[in-house]
Image (cartoon, rainbow, N blue to C red; front, side):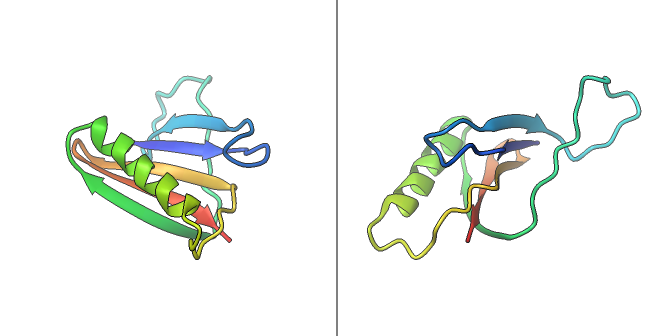
Length: 98
């Protein structure tokens, strides 16, 4: 399972789209489903394990803390970011960077 953040209007304060996704292709999918592409590029990946949803909530706090630090060596690109739920208790967040 993936959560994909894309079509950023500007940055995290502007509008953006969020999609719940799967990497499974199925001929039985509804016509209402859309294909979502993750933009190629550089990503900074954060990871956590633990009980959901608290593990992903805490991990987003770590992401925000990293990018709001005055000495942060990375700049967000605001192209495509995503959460990857690798198992029921493991999540990775990939943030596009310049």
